Image 1 (cartoon, rainbow, N blue to C red):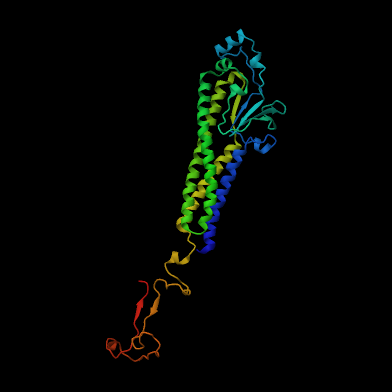
Image 2: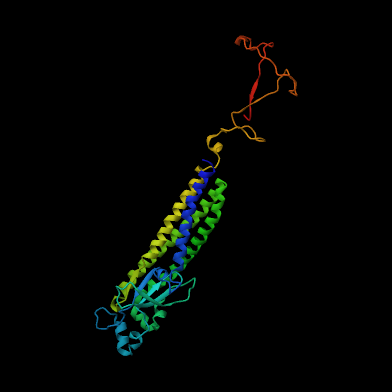
Length: 328
């Protein structure tokens, strides 16, 4: 196959690995710049609160909340500083207003992004400015339990993302060793496997977590006209990154067993003449010293009788030149 073929075997998984890392970085940059429209589209979860209000006349509103609002001033809840929408990203959340206060308007206007933290989770009680009594009555047990589970799982999701991103970066560095030997390819395959496993864990965790949280929000807050949805763009990037990562791992494995840079390693012999200072390859022959010229081999070359019959080959007066196999 030669060096060119070896390079081709390494080039393909290297490109896949770089693509996977680039997509992972894009996922991590979502919500980090409120002035970047492209990054503002990368969110896991959206809470649409543009029509948020509490109407105690709606059938099904929790009795505890109705009693609370009837006995106190409800202005605290209805006039809370609630924006039109909230986007939950990996490290923070962003909020803003719709251009014409329509839920069908795609031109979202981001007005605020929270500080980025490694252990971020979206706490609606704190963000929406609700006190504990109102939140407990408004959310109910189902949503409160869902938020507790979300807070716990999101920590493991973040850890999986960090490990997958770091391992993918290491995979690129180790991948350069694969240009020189198949041992380098094997080492890169191991790193790629670790990266792919954690990346798959991150993808599955985030998908299941926010799909479940969306359903819980829509069911528990339907009386308050709060609608939740899952982000599409960010999950497309995540699962494309997973596909690139596993494809790279398969090609790294292929290059560790099937892409040799030396033809004699593949065929088992050397088709070219041996170079100076190199031992003869398998099945080559070398001439031994002639018994008629002494050990030095400096005498004249012996003459041979071309008319010697085959039956005389075993006699002493028959000249012949013995050969021996080399490196057998």
